Structure formats: C-alpha cells, structure tokens
Length: 213
Image (cartoon, rainbow, N blue to C red):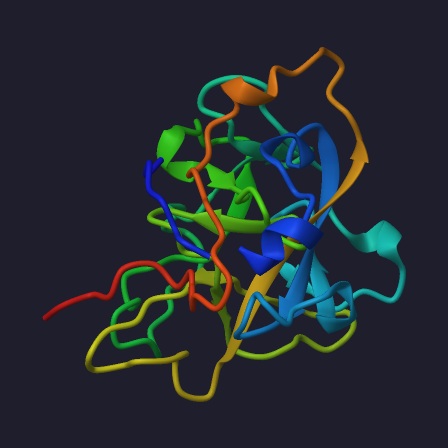
C-alpha cells in the first residue's frame, strides 16, 4: 500500500469517509464515472456479482455479498471464494494499449489471496470509492452489460499512447455499500490506506501512475 500525501481541502469539510467505512460485509456497485469529484450513487450502472462479474441488475439481490478481511492481507471474498485481478482464466483486456495482459476481476475458491489483491478507500472521499495499487481509483469495462448478461471489469491503465479510457470502453468506479459491520471490533488505525490531506482547488485525478514506454 503506498504511503503518500495527496494535497487537496474543501472536500475535507464535507466528506466523512474513513478507512473504517470499508470494513465488514457489503455490496460493490459500479458507477459510470471519469471524475471521482462528481461521481455519486446516481451514477450507478450495475454491481459486481458473487463471481466478480459486472452485471446490470433488476434486483439488488442479484449483487454479490463481499466480506473484507479484518486483518492482513485485508482482501475481499464472496461465497464463490477470494477475489483478484490475477486469475488468468478470465478475459484479458486485449483492446487496451497498456492493459492487454490484465485479466478481469473474479472470485474463486481455488485462489489464495495476497496483499496485491487488496482494494482500499481513501480518507476524505465523499463516498466509499474503492481503489487499487498506487492510488488508482478507476476501472475499465467494455460497456454496461444488458440485463441477464455479464461483463468484465479490468483495472484502468493509461500512458502516452492511451491517455484515457480504452477506445470504445467506459470508465468506471467502484462503490462499497456496507451491509453489516465486522463481527469483531476494528481498530481504525490498524486498517491500511494512503494518508490523504485535502487542499482546496487541487486537482487530484487518482488515476494511478502513468505507464511509460
């Protein structure tokens, strides 16, 4: 987990998200968003199911139920198993210039999670958005799936040859919606996450590091 400071402040007064908000059991909703500052639950276009697929639900009961480990490596699992972006049996993002070797998020009982599978939130967010890696808070999808079908969710990658979302794809965010707390008391200070200080007027894209080639 990167230990960094992102300077940014007007949001600090109105935002209440802390690391403790991303604990326990919850659903993960998918937002159509390219800017975390304007994203809200109204941007929801689906959710992740228990297998990790991106679905366009008719009933929230179709959405997966995920549990975050209370201790290291603080990873997510569902009734289908541990969740990861490294399952090579899932589709690769072959349309992406920089993400061609990336595989879709999935949850499977045959996988043993490690710290690189961890998702996290950032103190001061207006909602409990989920990030990965080096402060990267956006994801890549081909399209919003039709009701009854599934879609893949990949990590968002960018660089000089592809500055934005993969051409023809949609840029997404993930939103944690807590259903219940952990069965044991959580020490908020023990939950890992990047330290963030918000400063008024600062542009903080949270798109992760540019890939150089």
